[in-house]
Each structure stands twice: as structure tokens, then as C-alpha cells.
Image (cartoon, rainbow, N blue to C red):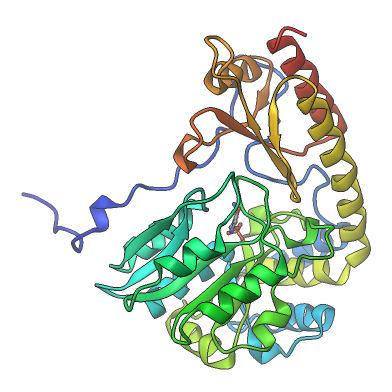
Length: 363
Ligand code: PMP
């Protein structure tokens, strides 16, 4: 007998495929495929995690109060405008389930983060894909794609896997051009890394509008990807809607404690920003001098475009690097058949990839 069929559309969803973890037969592996920090987490976050692990028999605080208070204090926000999730992935999914249904449309961009499409489809809605211009989100093309069925627009700023960003005037123009019933999701997973004056993470845009939310994560600069901690800042009505449908205990206690401690240790974050800034520049410069085109990035990763020559394509480089223990991310699924994404890693990892790619390119 057959198992019951899922709702129409569910089996059309292409499941998320995480980056490679292993390099078979290589003793030392450098995993640069998931934009994880090489610096680990703040020691105070690890200590808080261990302390919380002493009472695992108890349910967590369903409101994640300590964590929301720590975030509110750091950014000068009201805790009532904050909701935490099991990774920002959970919040992106909740937004789709709350604002989309059959017949609705969600707008995403050509090389956008794959989770948006999965969650739009899971809600029974249609993902409308808007072209980008040279790895950059095109705000006017998004506005042109809006129909009366549009309910949500996803903008990763900065974007993954391109590492580019949309300047604040353009994000404001996007918000101003959207109908008021359309939610603009500013996914700011990589916000902390950006060192630009014309960048706005989204706080101000959320504060001054009823249809903008900003999502953030502890998985990148805070080095807590394993704990799955994300947060969202949004208007009270949006927070209320998400709170109605989320799991009552969607955050676990060690994650709440570790996230709050990490948020209070902004000195650790400052060090991580400085480290990344230095190596982002060095890696970009070194790879560019090897006849590889690197999309200028403001994040903790770079998109490397390979020549369209037999033996020099991204798939060849992927095999070559993997055989030496360097695992980068193939980004075919993001519409880049001939590129690899590299996370800024430890000094040893960065220098190793640069040397290996020099050899690969025949330098
Ligand atoms: N948004 C973007 C653009 C990302 O790259 C990621 C992580 N890959 C996420 C959201 C999700 O992060 P998390 O669920 O770990 O908070």
C-alpha cells in the first residue's frame, strides 16, 4: 500500500543540500563551505552553554527572554519587537507560513539563498525569480515583478553566495515602491561583516515602517552555528502573528544562554570583524592575481569564477582542492555552474587555498 500523499506541490520542492564535509583519504581537512567562522565562539558563550546544560530536564523559557533582552540592550530595541528562532531559517519559514498561501507569490532573486524558495513552495505559494545584474540584486527588477498576488519579498543583504550588498538608498526605494500589504524581509545574516557607510542592516527601516522585518543569525560572526540561533526584529503585529504559529519551545536553554552571553561580548565580535576584514582583502587580492575573477564581497566569503577552459573549470578546481583537503562550496544550485564559494578561514586555510589555486592555475 502507498503512504498518504503530501499536499500538492510538496514533492516539487528540491530539498536543501548542505555543503560537503569530507575529503576522502585526506588527513587534514579545511572546511570552507558553510561560511562558518574560523575563530569559534566567545569563551563566555561556551561557559554559559555548559552551565545551562546542567539542567536539561527542564523546558526552556518559551519566550527566550534572556536572549531577547541581550539583543534589545545591544541594539537599543524593544524586546516586544523581537522573536528568536531555531536558526534564522526557522523565522524565514514562519514568515512564509504566516503570510503566504495557495495562489500567492513570493519574490526572490536569481542567485538568492535557497531556503526562501523552499519555504515559499512549502506554504503552497509560487516563487517568482527576479534576474540579478552582474551578481547584484536589481531593485527595479524586483519592483517590476510585483503583482496583486505578491505578499512577500526576500532580500538577503548582503547576499549569499555572491557577497554583494544593496546600498541603503536602494533598499529604501524598494520599500517605498512596494504595496503596503507586501512584507519586505531583509535577511541580514552577514550584516556584522559589512564595513560600508552606505549599508544599513535594516534596524531603521523596520522601526519606521509596518511592512519591513530584519532577520539575523548567531551562526556566522558569533560562531554558534551548531546551536541554531536566529532572531527577527519586526513590527508588533508581525511578531504577534509568528508567535501564534511557532513551536512553544522553539529555542533550547543552552542556546538561549549561549546566545545571550555571546551578544554581551561585543569585544569578541569586534575582533572577528577585524580578522575577517584583513583576510577578505588578502584572499580577494591573491586570487584575483591568478586570473580568477572574484566578485567583490563585503562578507566572510568570496565567490570565485573560473575560466571556461577544459581542466580549469570550477568542477576541476573543486576536485583538485578537495584532494588537498580544502572544501569549498559548489554553487551550481545557485545558478553559478562555473564558480566556487570560499569562506574566509584560518590563516593556514586561506594561505593553503591560495597556494593550491596558484598550482591549479599553473602559476
Ligand atoms: N540567510 C542567509 C543569507 C544565509 O546565508 C544563511 C546561512 N547559510 C541563513 C540565512 C540561515 O542562517 P541560520 O539558519 O544558521 O541562522
